[in-house]
Length: 582
Image (cartoon, rainbow, N blue to C red; front, side, top):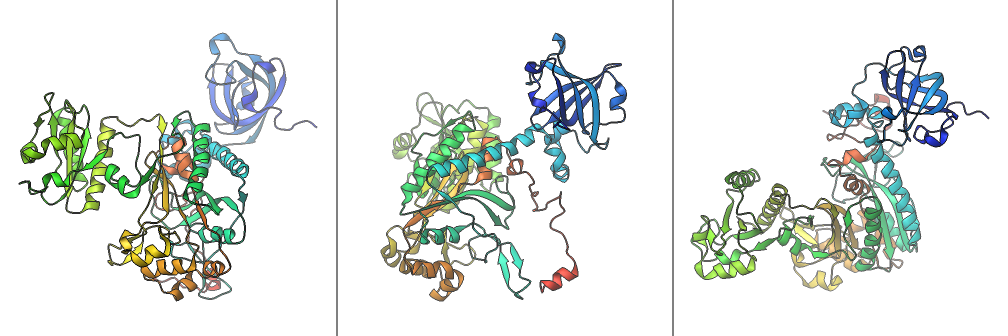
């Protein structure tokens, strides 16, 4: 049968087809009038090819971005018109027939080739046009390739793909649920899953050895550059009879291969560093450290225990050694001071180290003479370096401030190696933390995590001293995944929830399925769930996660293209037993 619209893709028209008659179809990307002859760039998903029209009437009143099908002969371009930048740049098609398939409006809301430079609200309103931009569509194509690779990889590792429900029940997992009212059961609601957490644990109890899925997760959270409001996707996996290292081995295998296959950057070798939470907060000022940044933070609080300098005496004091920084201009130090004040610091002290290893700067006189040599050794000071000081009353605040100063210094001094992906696991998270508003003990991470030491630790330790088998995997300062060894023992689970203020009745009501399942023999199990969107954001060097999602919401959780959220009719509300209140 004759192919009605095309015999070849636009990107496949090469020198091998010279003198052959072909049909191609696509969108008119550009029209150039050379006086009696018109040249068109015709684009489809697979590439762009140049079309030559000697009969100008064929293209009369047809604007750019219209869809056409053309028939013609492939000829070699003149040498002075060859375009070496594209695969089809050696040839062109001399048209004999042209059919208009879909006419575009002549006034486009933006130019396709420069759509990424357009205001985001306009891009999202006309996302179908934005996606015609090759740079934009390449991100979505890469997403498809990544999904295909992940499924093959997990299958090769012996994991079984299982889909878990989208309509489920609300549970206290940290973020706000998206609720769906029930028509049949007045006053009751379904909830979209924040993650397949309970279902994947139930699958382990059901006897499936290794489960995975590329799972949609729904959380009513505020937007960030690396967090899309509404929904996101993760490679969710769980393993029976597994410990923390078993999970790490799978994550290292999968993620190293992903970042090696889909990028040209260097990737951390296995095994990835395991960094305890407390160490990470001290050395990097965050539990999401960017290891491309060589700067490290040290604690020097004891150096100033007997100092006359009130801002340091009795406070938590951290320091950052910045090599070869002493020669920076006065403006550099003034800008760092301004940044420190913008993040809530009263000032930012520093000393310069001379060639003779003496100190210069106003902080020098407050460093006890009998501690200066110790400071040099502890901070690994060298000639021409600068030592920055960060202090506050609260240890956690000091850590966070020092982390921001560390990042800013690295950015300003171009210390970050942007040609690499550096991975690490953050381990040994605290099981509990104190709620800032209520002062109560709450779970700091996943409530179903196994405490290190099990029931004995829960019964004999102070809550804030209990460490859990909880872990994150971090790449270039971006948290890709959280995970944990699960608490599969009922006694231990009840005690863990009791410490956080839940009664046994609370647990049996809120988590009845898991509680009941554990009564019938639950294997030890563990897992994690790397975020697909964040992986793609890193692979594509995009600054915003919306660039790797086909139809994203904007930063205010609105779907501008579809007009969501929107009002519904009174009839629909009545069916769902809902009355909207002011």
